[in-house]
Amino acid sequence: MKRFDLSLSLPPDAFIGRVMLIDGASGGLGQALAQALAGRGAHLILLGRTPCRLEKTYDAVLAAGGAEPLMQPVNYEGMTLEDYANLAQAVVREFGRLDAVALLSASSGQSAPLALADPVQWARSLHVNLSAPFLLAQAMLPLLRQGREPALLFGADAGPAAYGGAYAVAKAGVERMVRMWAEELSGMVCVNALDSGPLSTGLRARQYPGEVPGSAPEPRSAVPAALALLAPGCSVNGETVRLGMA
Image 1: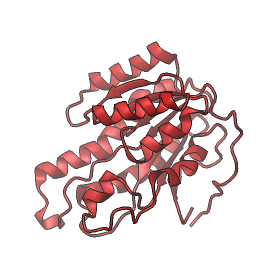
Image 2: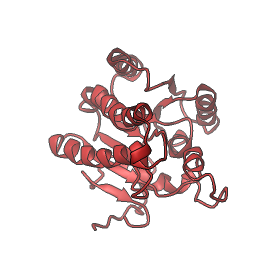
Image 3: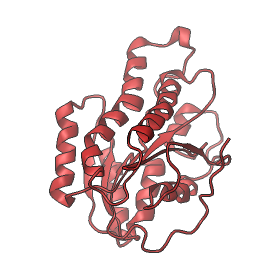
């Protein structure tokens, strides 16, 4: 397995003026990443499913001295291709370009043996965890190509082999998609995935209801790796970086 040094300190001005879209900003790593970028001079577009939690991230960005972000609640189960195009147009109107995209939202779906998986829930989970990140990346790609040393980061999750359901299958698909994007966009956009390992999030609590609350690391522990993969000049490309093994 390749190893990557993501511990190097980034220049203090690495994110000044950088236009960055964070999907999944209403909680978990996405929220922690938005808060970390707030005082680093980045201009943020915040996407999330839960409006009230997304508003908390919005307020936290302002409280940290960040510029006023563009905030958009999204529900990937019901979005149309026109909705994705409208998101891209909103970014154009507000900022004129896009330098980085972090696709960190996820939905746990049904945890069950494959033989007992509900077909409707299976299809829904595949869409939210695999098709939706693809469609959002595709919609933002023309803007990324105009960005400054653009980066595209997906959320990965190796997880257990059994009982992961469509969520686990979708995340395996994300890793393959990252390699495809990286090869197809070589020299134009830096594309990677980050597997943060267990984090203390609502998603983790739903997947492992018997786990002692707070036993997993806080989401902010994965922020330095995310920053390194989103920073200008990132030398890693087409890889899934797993914390603890990266």
